[in-house]
Length: 324
Ligand SMILES: Nc1ncnc2c1ncn2[C@@H]1O[C@H](COP(=O)(O)OP(=O)(O)OP(=O)(O)O)[C@@H](O)[C@H]1O
Ligand SMILES: [Mg+2]
Image (cartoon, rainbow, N blue to C red):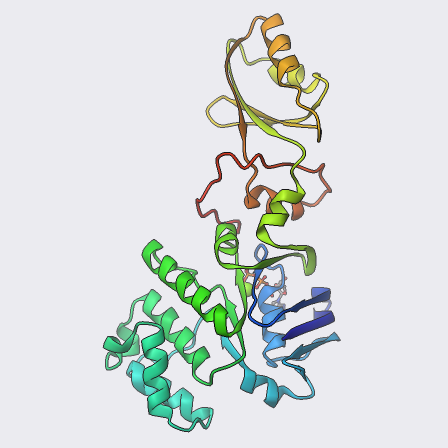
């Protein structure tokens, strides 16, 4: 459905994306996850045929995005980061205008259908300029659906929405995923986890990981992260901990607690307890914590390579964390 090979884009001397290769299966929802400036929008714009790559190749439904951009545009629905809308038009008129641009037969029927799909029928006669941000996003999505594209490319579809709208839009995307191939970009890791079948993590223009959200997490199991609460003088505690065999690294925790990661396959908790008590610390708490996709993401997008980390999948955080 989407096939990308060696895709590279330079803006002047700045390389925005560097030799990207990936593909999506029909009916798959693929998440494009990466920090600001990673190259998500650049890739998406190339895929929609808006600009040519510097090198490499991309196909949508078998059509080359450069050589056959007209065919590509017929098959892609694109929701850009900021949806360009005309404030003085009604929602209906705006969508009708977009449908006419695409020379759709039964434009009015089609507009009603997409309005229903994004639950905006009752606002059809309202002015675009009076819509809330979330409603505008939905009109943007409606616009992307007008021509029944095989492939949907959604650039941060939930950005700026309130929690209720986020859930609605995510559900909508999941529904759309049944009939369309969806590529969506996001900073929100739990969003990728909840919505996508597969995640591509992109950093500085390169794909640094590609897997199902579950497997990305499982890949890094084998070591543990432990939160530690200790009474007594914290001075020297880090050094003491770091010296215990099996402890890979020590990190600051919240509110005076500490966290440490273990060397994969080892569980140094008993030694840690003995060492602490031997040094007259009061051991108040020692608790394994799970590594979320957030931690994995931070690891993968860190500058220097880091030792593998883990998840014990015990207290999975459902929180949305933005890594921007
Ligand atoms: N039109 C442009 N001219 C020059 N440089 C650009 C242009 N558009 C993007 N860039 C650069 O290319 C890189 C990738 O940008 P891109 O917008 O693709 O990132 P992104 O992953 O979408 O980021 P964000 O999460 O902030 O939306 C950045 O370094 C950016 O500064
Ligand atoms: Mg972007």
